[in-house]
Length: 517
Image 1 (tube, one colour):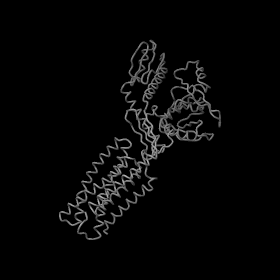
Image 2 (cartoon, rainbow, N blue to C red):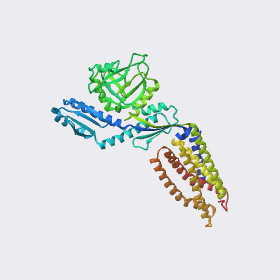
Image 3 (cartoon, rainbow, N blue to C red):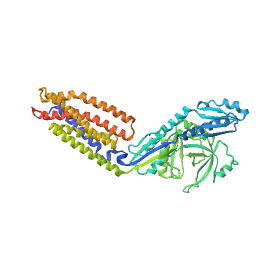
Image 4 (tube, helix red, strand yellow):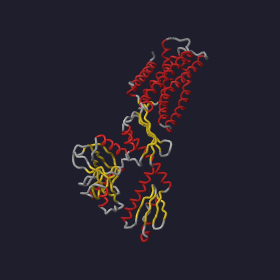
């Protein structure tokens, strides 16, 4: 055997060995998609009005703080809708008030009435904020399900502008997954003004029943002591937070001083600066750690704190892990509602796998009969290259972590057809070369050389189509595109390199006057 041919055989055997190593055992190394493994299919709607209302409320609160700092008295600031708020202004403060609106009027249109002004979020800002809210929700949910350890989750935009598709293959604890996905996890650190109180009425009574607009009454936990269950109480806290979850760098589960589950967090540079100034100015006062408008703990500030903190409470180990996961992934910008929920059972997936394997085996059998009947002994060459192609396809899918889906099985079967098509092109070209009275070896070499550009041309065109399917398709379509792409790449190698090596190997052993093709 020639040295060059020996190296070709070694390369082919090495590729086969690596491919088998990559996917064997298949039940452990080949990931299955939702339609084959079972799991949860969810369609969610992002309540974008929540984000508009939060933006409007935040703007109104900032305006109130700005007016208070500038000693401009207004009668009331009231949020009247998701994107509107009104300000009642005494006549003697009207000029000073309008001069203070430079920042607000960047995003809001102002219309005047009798003794009041109405501010409405500008239409282009409204559209952009809704779009940003959906995109942020998609990114946040994607981070959360990735940290759940789900194999090949799918999080994508759905049919309507405010809808999202979430598919979680292999998930069995559906309620936990839904709770983690839909929890807003909005963290705020606020100053406690009064409390805790036993009920909301007592908290309001602390202000004579008239709570100032810059104060919130929030429910929360009152810890009774180590090992004792916490009771529910109410706190009066400042409405504007010192820092929020947007200032977080990371969060992780830990233990408190009593070895109970807790969550520690660290702040980014800007958050650490703001928190350091805030804690320095409020030593001895209580700090409310607020999660989704509920005070989970209210420790006393003992000294200046910069970039580290800890959230304590009556957490279980699982709750502290879930809370740290949600804080790391970021807060959802708006609440979610479920439009559709389907659970795909693993038995249905097993039936799909069985049907896919049966159809692939049936297709391969028919191809075998055709190739042997039409090309006789040369048909074995094509069958070996197709078998190696399928082995490489499984190995590459397992190596890159691509999930096998039902459309992916269709791509798998299509790969068999592409392998046959490439070998037919090669064989027909060799037959044409044989008609020119060339020797067998020269005809084989010329056939492969002249058909290479044709094979590359057809495969590149198919790869472009697969790229568009992967870019613009959703879960099942992307699964098909991934399988098709890997199948195309491996088919170029097997149809040209492997098939040619098999011909050369056969012809190197003996003198062949006539080729069985």
